[in-house]
Amino acid sequence: MCLGIPGRVVEIMAGNAGQLALVDVLGAQRPINLGMLADPDLSPGDWILIHMGFALERIDEAGAQQALAGLQMMGSAGDAEDRRDGTGADGVGADRAGAIEDARSA
Image (cartoon, rainbow, N blue to C red; front, top):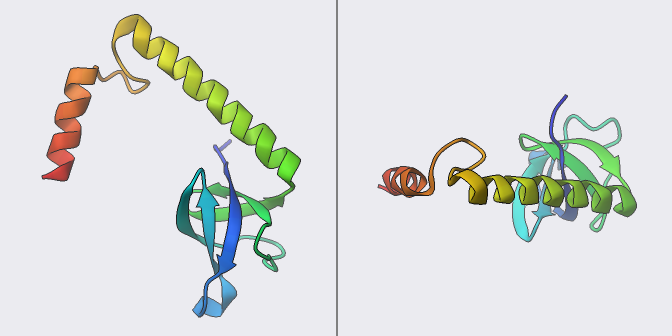
């Protein structure tokens, strides 16, 4: 089982045989590969389920909202865990997480 993130198609990108779309994912626009879809004929405004940069399936808006609500719930559970023991979902404390992020930026 994989975790799929819903995204809304903004545009089908030129070139690439129509296999790439610019997709809005929680306010960030990302290029997504459409090559795994059974029917890659999408239009702006269509919703897709994304995993690792690939569109896995077309979904309707109700399904997208349900998936987003589930992700928010999981995020809230992780936030509660962070408050309880001072670590993130990955088990890294906030002080170490900052150091890790600083190292990535360098």
